[in-house]
Image (cartoon, rainbow, N blue to C red; front, top):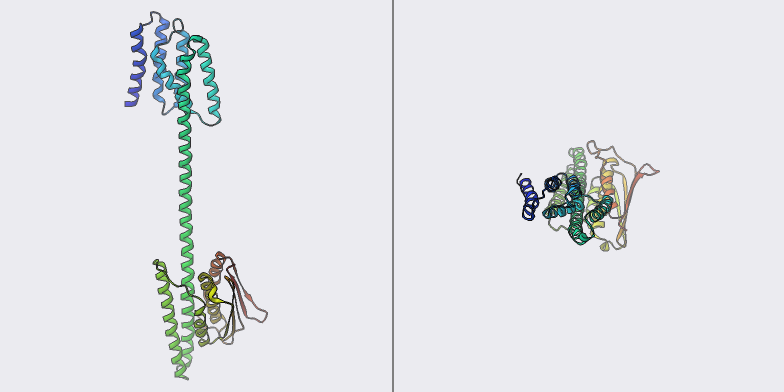
Length: 365
């Protein structure tokens, strides 16, 4: 409301006051010209809500005032809102339409000069060209600011999306690590417990050994979980590597598998991430053999090839009935495949002609 009152006051003052000072026109046409100039300045009230309509209406009112005024007379003060209308005209259109508006503005200036006479060319250009250029510059700056704002929004959306994807990937990685730790530990404990139940009456010493194996598996699982918790807490943790394969193989052998393990190449040269996943492939393969092929013969070969590792785990057919309750979720090898793919590798698993199972993995490049 204050802005409207201010614009109307200025429109009246800059037109009426100079007209009174220099002499009020004595004809009806002169009165109409003054009124049109006041109206031309007044319509600029809508420069925010309807800028195009305000600019066109104001310039039309000024041109009409020039045409009907006595001896082509226009109040001197009208040149102020006249210049403002030209600036608003340049500010209100963008893109290809801006070129058409520039052409229309040029035609308007030519008509104005033709009507008012060649003596006023400099004055006409002075009150039209600079405002139009200023409006164009302001429009271009506004468009640039809008583009930057749009790019900033896009970058923010991409950042949020990247953050969400990172969180999802981290959750998947944590879930896979928990699956590897808990799945293997529980499988060994359940199988050892089942064996201990069968031996408790006939062979107490061997039953005692199964209890020791259960305790060792539980302790190893606890250490793995503590390592994972420290890793989630932001602490530097040494990743599990191929040195732990011997322990896993030993526990699997005590659980009834006939396991042989061969390591080839320079394992110490492997990156920690590659060695860790190679260990996880061996652990998951042994866990699946314990679940689905108890007592089977298992052959493990890990070969270091530069910064990559080849893992091959093959088990034969089961020699005893599977222990109920350790069937697994089926996500172990799938999760390993996703993590191995990130390092540039693959994992394959399938049945062998002899009825066993083969897992092959290439980790790293």
